[in-house]
Image 1 (cartoon, rainbow, N blue to C red):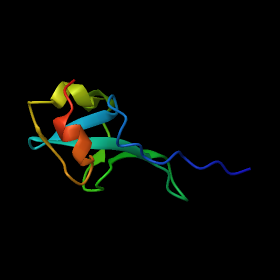
Image 2 (tube, rainbow, N blue to C red):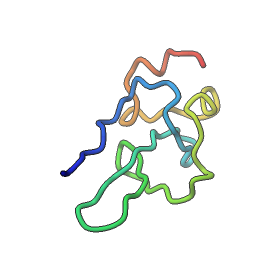
Image 3 (spheres, rainbow, N blue to C red):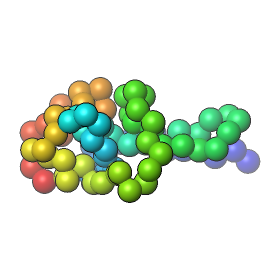
Amino acid sequence: MTVSAPDFDPELSGHSAIEVEGICHAVVSEYPADGDPQKVTECGDHVVNDPFEKDAREAFIGEAEMCSDCWPESVFSESP
């Protein structure tokens, strides 16, 4: 049986995030057809290899600009 990874849920307030050049991106898992699973950003621009770089989204509120391609408008107005 093949199991698909769950869809990305941008409303999940504690979702893993990473700051890249002052911008907070959402971290998601990618499951290539042939190869090892890897962590990438929701917008697909940045590959995340180091697990220690990731943190909960709340850690970046007020410290980094939120990537508009990774997060829905609702997270911009949420407070941690």
